[in-house]
Length: 223
Image (cartoon, rainbow, N blue to C red):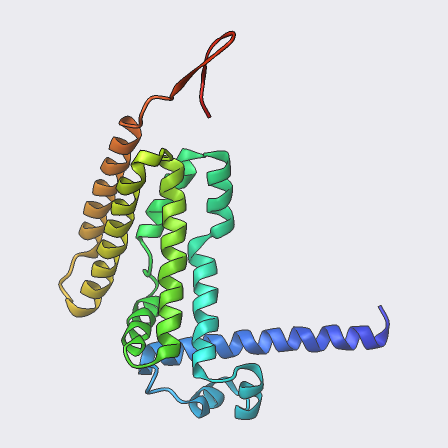
C-alpha cells in the first residue's frame, strides 16, 4: 500500500468512526429530550463534531434517525442468523430466535426512542416512512421464522394470525412499560411466550400429512 492509499484508508476509517460517534450521541439525546427537543447544534456540542460536518455526513435529523434504525434492526433481527437457521430448518435455533424477538426493546434507550419515533411519525412523513420500514422488516423476519416452523400452504392463515398477535402483544408491552410504573413486563413476557409456544406446538402437531403421489415403482412423498 502506497502513502496515498494509506491516506485514503485512514480518512475513510476516521469518517466511519465520526459517523458512529455522531449516531451514538444523537440516540442518547433523542432518547432523553425527544426528537423535537434535540437540535443539530446540540448534537454538535455533545459530540464535538461541527454542525457543518454533521450536515456533510447526514442531510438532516431524519437521516440520523434512519441510520439509528438501520443499526438497531441489523442488531436486533440477526437476519443472517435466522436465514441460516431457516435454511437448515434448525427448529431449536428458530424458536430461540423467536424468544429473543419477543423480548425486543429491553435496552433502556430503545424503550425511549421507539415511542418517540412512532409519535413523530404522526406529523412527519419522513419519520412515518422509517416507521413503516421498521414494521415491514420486523414482520418479514417474523413470518420467515414462522413459515420455517409451519411451512404448509394451508397454515398461512395461522402463521399470519400468530405474527399479528406477536407484533400487537409486543407493542402493547412496550407502551405499558412506559405508561404504567407498576406494570410487570416479565409476567407479560411469560404469558406471551407460553401462548406463542403452545400455538407453534399446535401448528406443528396438526401439520397435514404429506401428499402421496403414484409413480411407476410405488408411492413417494411429494415435495
